[in-house]
Image (cartoon, rainbow, N blue to C red; front, side):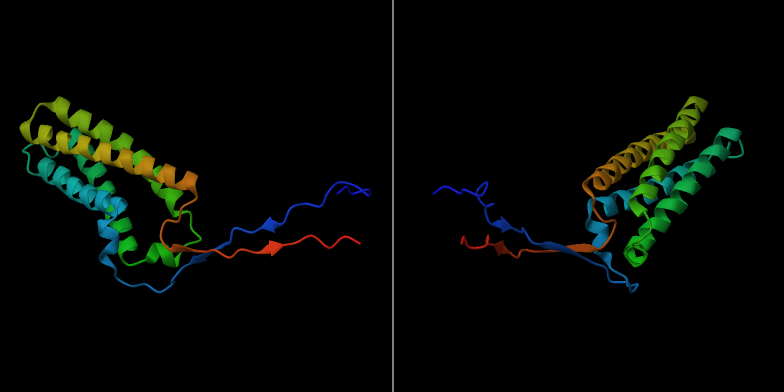
Amino acid sequence: MAYPSGPPPAPPAQSLGSTNTVFITETRFDLSYIVTPPGIIKAVLVVLNLLCFTCVEASAFRSNGRGVYFVFVSLVGLACTGGLLLMYLYHVVEKYHNFKWLKVEMVGCVVLTFLNLIAATMAVAFGNAAYSAAGFFGYLAMVLYGVDAFLKAKALKAGELAQGSRVHTKQTHITTPPALP
């Protein structure tokens, strides 16, 4: 059948559905975050930062400039990572979902990766056993901060949420072209 007035009508259009984002804006304690990969990484980083701090503070050379810098990096990492872990556990991140959490976390993880690299290298170069142990834990923290930064960059690229859920509803709408005269 030919269409003398122009091209044939377009085939029926189908909509694939819609996506709704759901945020619960009440703060509540929820331990389910701890078993997710980012939650495990944050919990291990809190322990590693505590170990780094303890190793240097237990040393006889804790007031050395290297030790002071290492303690500073460990405490900054502990405060940032521990604070974020608490905010995720209490769903503060979900409550303030308009803030760019993933981007801020990614930048923070990159900065802490380099700070731990410098601090651990300085500690290992000192030659003291306590500093060497602290340097080992510092290198582990550096690797985990790097992995966390990579995961945050990947999540940003995929358009994921820091916390909350997306509900996918699948509704198919079929639009038929108008009847021919």
